[in-house]
Image 1 (cartoon, helix red, strand yellow):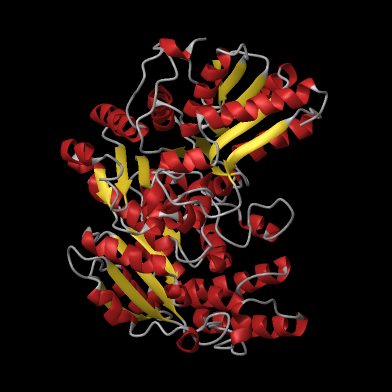
Image 2 (tube, rainbow over the protein chains, first blue to last red):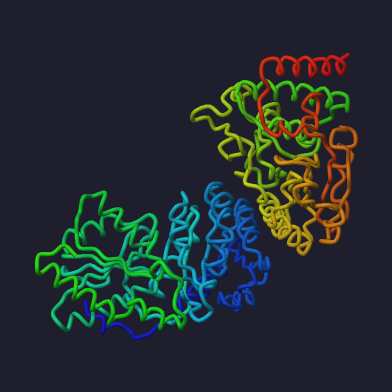
Length: 325
Length: 278
């Protein structure tokens, strides 16, 4: 697949989230948005203007946000509890665990401005723990969409599901990774580019730079299999195992701490399956992030087409010389 | 419904006996807090709440959320007495693979939410109350809070939200027994004056003797206190109420009587039941 065939830019996933909700809310009055003073950063002002009866404001109170949402969901409301991911998943973790997941009510928890979207605002506002924290909680589906198409499909899937969901969105405009005929299924990864040299498994906004690296290397005759692992839980073991078996190495890429996120989830599956393959996790290392814009932070940690291409080349050199990464 | 005050007092006495029996059998339980809130639960389920085992999914049913989830044994006894599940199920409390665990879970018929981590019930209840307002339903939401639990900040988030949204279908009942696991609440992190705090947040507040059946019936049946305001009922109670050596004694926050204590407790509770039945 040639990425150059795809449109260059799309919208921020957050905007697509809001648009999709408006589409759903127009048909279903049980759709509710609950926010913690975050309708602006959640791109939900048009929603609030069009559906004033379907938005609930709790103020800056994330624990209450999640408890209220659970109560509403227990009465049949289809709730999208929207809040900056850093606060939602840390301050309200116990409410997520008990009121939503353990009590088993289908609240859709929407972490906005996730990862290092807030860039220069610093580490208080970076959400690099959310996937790790929620992976350890039973009974919650974790989806990190890579582009506008995945976002639209994920929001619709969450609205239709009777399970608790966590959806994680960033702020920047994203390239389209799919044509209009894309396939999307919760729990089933999508292969963005075909190739058997190195598999790059990525999620969210890290998929686009991975695809960019594949593009750069394609011109050098290297075929990279880029996989959008949009569903972190339940993880698509089958696609992962096939990629690890068919490719010479695997790199995971995520806008998250390397601890407890996508990379460790993938590594766990491969270990359990007895598959040994050169493997590298790319994400934010065990440190508070450098200052800068999201793009600068990405570049700093190698989450860029050039950075990832370099890692892929070096992994190929190691495997060519008989090493094991 | 339709019980006399005297009959409800007998029912409370019987429930206390059952409670002790099941706690002894389970070898675990939050005995003191169970005994402090059981009169409130008795009045709620026998006189106030529109709930029944045959209509547990009825959209118009009243909701009861027990935020102080550690007193679940009292709730189990009350729900069993109302026929939500066979009383014999209570013999499995705390046993391997039993649904009757030490904090409320929805696996038990009649329990609406999984609770027990403190400071959750008021937010959940406010959400349910808001849904009721949105859907123009007539149900009320009753939630029981512990006084030690008020140190959790989420309560105050929910208190603000409930008043802001004029949730007068929400009734919080404070099991005000003055003790938490470490000490008197006033010596741990004093929430006083609780009434003034809630009033300043925009709630209607009243006090009641949490062991006086007649007063509980009167107060719990006349909510909201003010139209447009959520209601807080501060029920003054005694931890360990009904078993003299447990009353106001910190160590009975949780704990199981030994055989001699158990016999003494049963004797006292049986005498009380006989008095009321005479």
